[in-house]
Image (cartoon, rainbow, N blue to C red; front, side, top):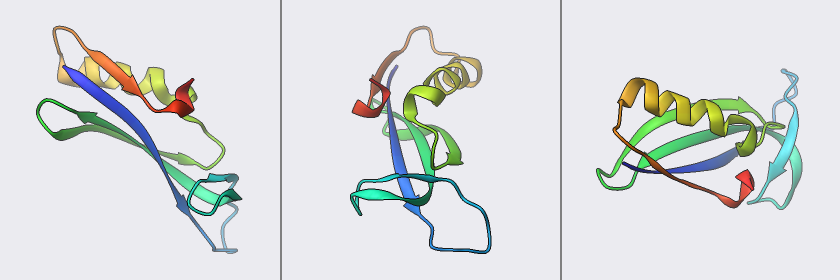
Length: 88
């Protein structure tokens, strides 16, 4: 199984809720945002896991959790993981 893990920032402009700031690449600045972390099976072309977090969490923080989820629920015999540069 070949799984690619990637993060996507979703900017939030609300002042009603206290949302922590994170780096949003589309705006090229730190602002209130939430982040989605996706695991995508490259060979079968489908998403296998997703995790939503506050904006201050990085991919390297959730990478172990995402890989454990793939092994626990997907039960692959082996897995090769590709991470975005944010996990480095």
